[in-house]
Image (cartoon, rainbow, N blue to C red; front, top):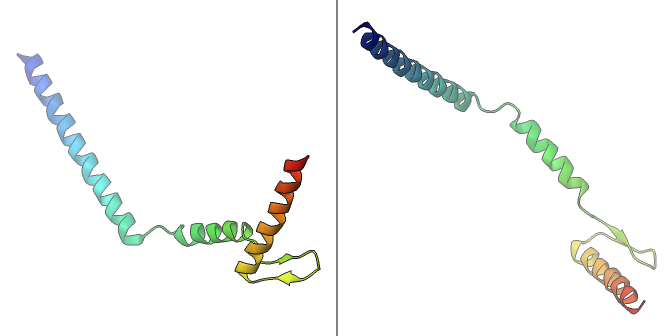
Length: 91
């Protein structure tokens, strides 16, 4: 008899413990949404910094001419790499 009551009480405590955990989780989520993520600006600044290092903004041709416009930089890269691949294919 007492064992059955104890089992029921344990189940009741577990139920209310789970409810309390859900309430606290929802409160935490609401506070985070309201305040926002304070590291978001820092994170985006770091991404911008990393991606800016992976960009070629200018290139010099064989005649020592500096190309800065993206289409001309792209054409020069294609020209140089096609020459390199042609040379390596003939070896």
